[in-house]
Image (cartoon, rainbow, N blue to C red; front, side, top):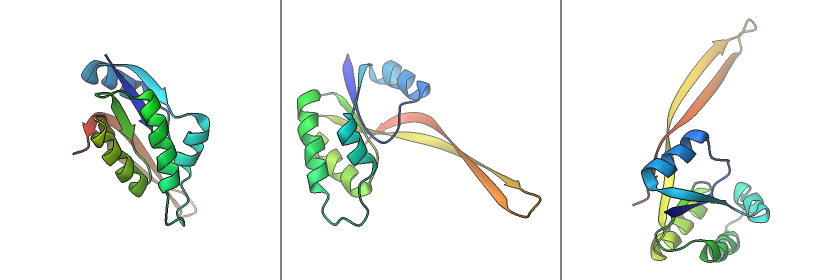
Amino acid sequence: MKKMVLIFSHVLTEKQIEDAEINLGVDEFIYLPKDLQEKWSSIPPQEKDISGITKEIKNWLEEVATKGDYVLVQGDYGATYDLVNFCRAKGLKAVYSTTSRRAKEIKGQDGKIEITRVFEHVIFREYF
């Protein structure tokens, strides 16, 4: 069995957990520690160099992940790119969650339009 290390800003849905267990053979899920989760979830968009943040996460990954484990990486594009490359170099399987998306528009009496978006997990796809 395998672990899935979670480097993203949300909590897994039941559907994601079920998919990982059944289709990827995952039996353990490891969330980022609170301090790293806060940094990952709020990477400053004005910062030109975010390597300090990704370095901390890489160091943590080396402690908790073993070759062949899955790492769900979703977030800031540059940080995601850096961590996916790191995972691949270390023999970890970097994946992301694909989703189906539905939008519903409701026109209010005042003429304003409210849009609700629903995202639903479909599969985990490995970065290539």
